[in-house]
Length: 483
Image 1 (cartoon, rainbow, N blue to C red):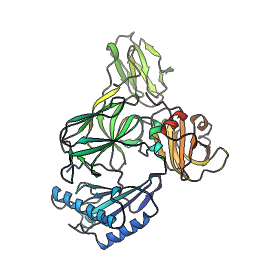
Image 2: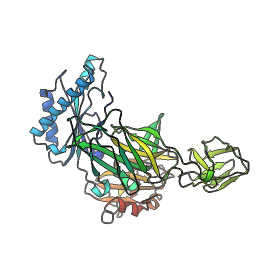
Image 3: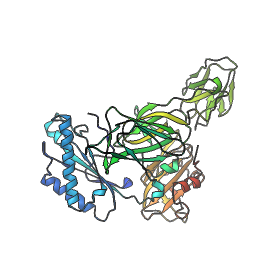
Image 4: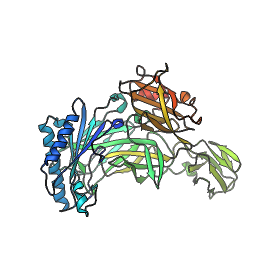
């Protein structure tokens, strides 16, 4: 059965702190067809509760699971009873109910083979994800917009000033707790690299064994709840969003982040605009042949998005040049990406409509309109960070790498990061002492990443008194706030 659920990241890890994510994960197991806590499960919960002392809890997500014995309906109920048993234990030991979110998956998320007796017990479990309040100020993490809607209504809601519209069909939600008259929707947008810098949302995408990076045309999170309990989008239903793009990128598609945040699913293609006034549009492939079906004297305007140049035979062609008199052109793209040639008269700045209509939201979660690209000269950098006075910055917690040639940000542990040697790179680092350090692209390019050093010393500037939120970070780095 395909379960649709509001969830945060749920990793099946045994008692492991993930410092960069401010998160603790645990799991307790149950006896066959039982929802009572075993003595071992109670001991494990006691240990977990002791570890939560002196920490500010943001949210605890309890996720219930079963093995495959029994019907789907029975196992959904059994997983709910197991979750309730853990919730009750936490409440009895001083954990506030306002921090606890519940989700039930029945038999749909096994972590072991159900046909192997010695393994299937691993599926009889409740996963526990504890998220701590981040030391990163809320000005950099953004806030959710909350919208109240009638659960049985057929309605549309304007989500932002640019015209993003959410369409909700009648009876779109189901709630495990029974009937619910009013649903709370929570919506948050990320429109530029500064918004994404400390979101800790992964911006890498793997397909066919190749890892790409995302340059976003706009990203959002959407969740739903009733009385703080998650609701699901009903089977056979989906929400539709007419999404106002944050900016134009070439070759974008619509993606959803997997619930375990391991990768993205490419869920929908996005159609390009036809050429304006009947102007023709043609695509070319890397190191392929460009053969527009037009007259020989047709003129073509090069549009490559972030790619700076292509190579035409022995000549380098810059963005904006026109090709005259070719109908069969061998092309080598210096950026090793596909590109687009637009006929003269087309609007190269608007390959897609400003508002993409009818994007399908079949599950709550994180969605992104993205161009997937590959770094032309990737390098992994082990860094020794110092401040402007040459003193070590030792207590870094979250490092964000931004390539200003694209619209995206990538979170790393301060120990090392990956960037494109040819990129327009900036770094932003938050510390445990709530200090923000930044290096601009102009300063970063002074670091010679090809000099063979094992560890590079990178000088950051303390900008804590100058930058208090993502808008100020965008202004400081020169990131465009709007397309």
